Amino acid sequence: MKKVAVIMGSASDLPIAEKAIEQLESLDVPYEVHVYSAHRTPAEAAGFAKEAEDNGIAVIIAIAGKAAHLAGVLAAHATIPIIGIPIQGSDLGGMDALLSTVQMPPGIPVAAMAINGGKNAAIFAAQILSLSEPKLKQKLEALRSDMTKSVLESNRKIEEKYNK
Ligand code: RP5
Image (tube, rainbow, N blue to C red; front, side):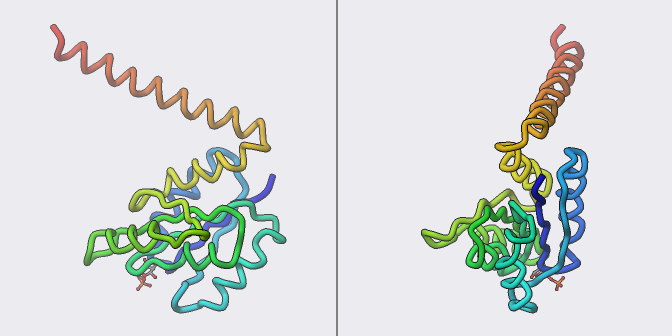
């Protein structure tokens, strides 16, 4: 199976990267992890994106806060799908990163997740890979089914408690 790359703009983004990594591991999706900043290491970020496809990577998850240009810069240098996760910074609550990630110009798309949406980024990456990986598709279907059971169980307990 091809890999997912998880790229964070700073090591301080690691707690959100770990949410994505945990979910990729639970789906047995192969991955690699790096820190490349659009602003502090622009040459390395661009170089990674340019070579990613040749290095067996099918999807990149890009995690960044503040003026979050990482996902957009990676998207500028690659045609594989780029999933952006805006990070909640201390000053503007992540709205800065959300808008920087989502408002891409026509022609260079980034699939923007929710602020701090590490888990969904991993699931979305797995959904892309699953188009050519039937076993992964089965795992995603099982994940969905587990979620349904869990919500219905919560509903059962709450109905039992309140609906007398
Ligand atoms: C962004 O600036 C990073 O992605 C991080 O979310 C934010 C702050 O970086 P540090 O100052 O913590 O390294 O580029």
